Image (cartoon, rainbow, N blue to C red; front, top):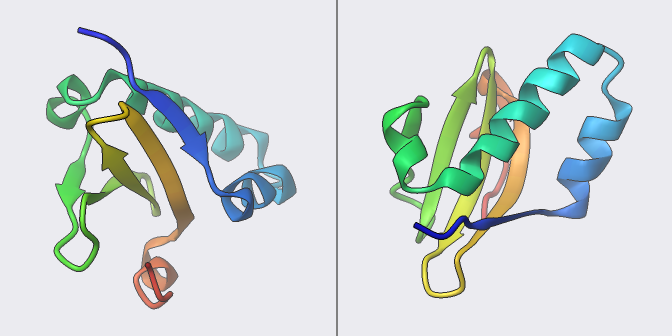
Length: 94
């Protein structure tokens, strides 16, 4: 099964760059890299489909949520948002 390419919005890259906790940064990056194994990874990580975002999913990594969109035709995973659980769903996700 071919791997998916994982791409990230610049706000996600900026968020990761500004994180001071190296352990957290590495854990989030590891979770993001594991997404390339879609759809197998859906059974291995805490992933849920988002109802308000077409093709959208969220993956849990501790108290953080990573929001991503899957383009099955192009085999791309696009990370749109990353943040703490209590604030990530308040953001307008489009």
